[in-house]
Structure formats: structure tokens, C-alpha cells
Length: 423
Image (cartoon, rainbow, N blue to C red; front, side):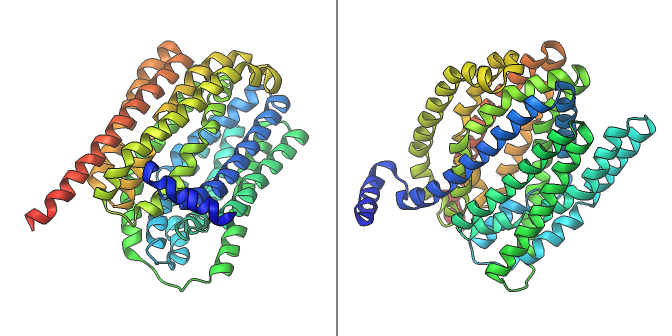
């Protein structure tokens, strides 16, 4: 039976232009993991909707958003760089990567401590202590969670999924328990940072024990990670700025409404998240010209699948909110419109291919232009139109990124074709 399925998958490859056996094996395992992640996120959202007031939840989301912006000034590109290095056999990065990430977190720690001091001077103890937690615990989580990038580079998707259960489940259990006993911002925020740091350390130690890679420092990996990190700064800031601005201009309660509106569509983007993981190690082993021959059809199939998911969500959203988040019925229409962001998911195929081939110039363009567009639109539209302004800015940015990802990818394909002639 297994051989028949394998033969069927191999037969289908002439139509899908894809390694279907790899996609089926890795995709199934990763889909199970992503589905579990979605369930954990849903459980946390339901618990917070019933245990926390909109004001408390808004403060929680603001702290996480601003901490995310601060974290942009660290070695955020190490994950993709490690996947690329490990897929080529450089397993020693598992030893060196956490140390380098910790060192590069010095700027983020200093900024978080400065934010803590600022809020302390302004007598906001909750935010002051929250950013103190972020300064102390967030770097630990970011440094040691690199184990997952290592597993993805090894294509060990089974172990990555198993560890992912713990990585997602443990913080959710800790935060729900904390919210049930202490439904205030500070305890919940502490539970978030502490539980994520603890589980990352434990799973990193376990991964080292399983693989026992040689101790070596791959300087090339670190250099590429630095480039990716610089590229990510503007994008990371843009990705969290909507929540920070909304908290500033509209307050905590509207931020809670907005957060509940965008969360379900983001969780529904499981196809994009799975393919993002699968694409990088596979694309590293193929030339850009080979990828260019197959990506358009794959992107079209991904678009159809994403459109089906978006349409299904639009019809299901009223029922989801009515039964799971009755306190946030105001979020329904916002959420239905935000589901249109799923249509731009195919861009991930082109972006991951550029990362796999270290096309730094195009990546700089891609990761600079679209975030700048988003930041400019947020500053213009959000103060004027509130939640609708934030959603419009994100949709416009996703469209720009979609077009840019395709344009920069084929620009690199043309350059690759010209290189032999120039030599």
C-alpha cells in the first residue's frame, strides 16, 4: 500500500512539478505540527477572551508588540542562516549560533532596559517591570530556540514537530493557568517570557544530546545571518508597529478588538507556514533557473488553496466569534476583510528561494521597500481611520511585497543566466 502511494505521488510530479514524496512526508508532519500550533493559539485566545478584560489583553499585546520591535535589533536572521548551513552539512552551528545570538542581543537588552526605566520614571510600574522581564528573558528564548532551525535544516520534521508541541504547548498552559489565578497584565506577561525561555533551553539541550554535532564556528553562517538580521529590522518594526500605534492612538480595548480580528486569519495561513519551512532546505539544493521553471505553477496552486481557505474563513467567521469569542463580535467584519491577506501567501516561495541562494541585494530591496510602505501607510491611515486604516495598510503592503518578491526573484534568475557569459 505504501509503495502504491509512493508511485502515485511520483506519477503526479509531472503535473505538479514538485517532489511530492518530500512534500507529502514533510508536509504531513509539519501540517500536524502547525495544526497543533493553531489549536494551542485558539485555546489561548478563548481563555484570554474569557479570563482577561479587553484592557488587560490590550496591555499584554502592546508589551509583546513593543518587545518584538526591540527584538528587531538582534540577530534575527540566524534562523534562516542556520537552516541553509545545516542543509549543506555544517552541523556545528548548533554550538556557535546561541552564543552569537546572545552577544547580538546586547543592543536589544539595552533598549528594553531603557524602556523599563522610561516607564518607571513615568510611574507606570506594570510596563516598567514588563520590559525588565523582556530584557532578561527574551534573549534566552531567542538564542536557544535556534534548535528548531537546526532540525529543519536536517529535515528532521518529525522531531521538529514533536518539539514544537512542547514549544507551543508549555507557554500556553503556563499563561492560561496564570490568567486563571492572576488575571492581571503583569503575571500573564511574566508567564509568557519565563515559560518561553525555559522550554527553549530544555529543547536545545535535548537536540544537542540527540545529534552531538562537532564543536565548530562557521563564520560564513554568522556573516550571512548578520545581513539577514539587518534586512529584518525594518520588517520586524513594521510587523509590530500597528499594535503599538493603535495602543497609543486608540487605547488598549480597541487594540484587543483588532488583535482578535487578525489572529484567526493568521492562524488559517497554515499552508504558507508549512511551505516556508519545506522550501528553504529544498531550494538550497537547486539552481535559480531550475526553481524558475517550477515556481509559477506551484505559486498558482498555492494561490488556489489559499483562496479556498480565505473564502471558507469568511463564511465561518461569524460562527467562530459567536461561539468562541462572543465578547468580540465587533471584530467579525474586520477579520473577514483581513482574510484577504491569505491571497498573497505564494510570495513565500519566491522569498525563501532568494534566501536559500543568498541573493542579498534583492533581499535588501524586498525587506526594505515593503516595510517602509507599511510604516508610511500606518502613520497616515491608522490615526485617520483607526482599525480600518491598519487593515488597509497591511493589505496594501502585502500586495506590494507579492509583486516585489516575484520581480526580484526573476531579476536574479536573469542575472544568473548572464554570469557564465560574463566569465
